[in-house]
Image (cartoon, rainbow, N blue to C red; front, top):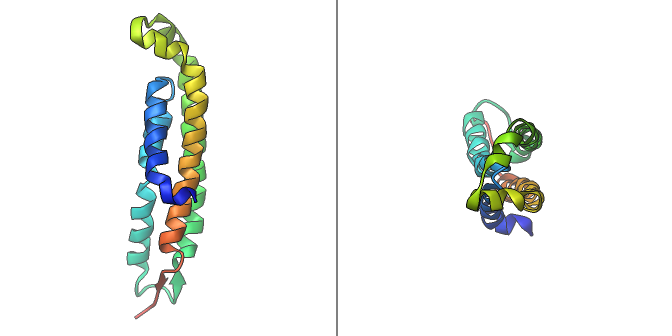
Length: 137
């Protein structure tokens, strides 16, 4: 069911991670994930005539690993920047200071939405390309 609402989940992850300020790498990662659709479409197009009867499922499986690695990298980069920029974050005042104050909550919500975005996009890609069969000519 997540795959039907992947665009809304991605948008929510982007907005919440931007609001948290500290989660901006995850916001960028959430916006980057829909590229998976184009990557699989390109792989299917490139494989025409080169391989014998391959389904989209093969490309989905290999790219799912890439999505997992992307999620892990975005979370690690967020953690590294969280530590490295801590002094900068603490020096912010006013509206940005308020956002930094509530960032632990928004960061956790953003992380959950970011992971849900990855799951929803993989499900949506499966729904769109799993039954596509590329035949050799």
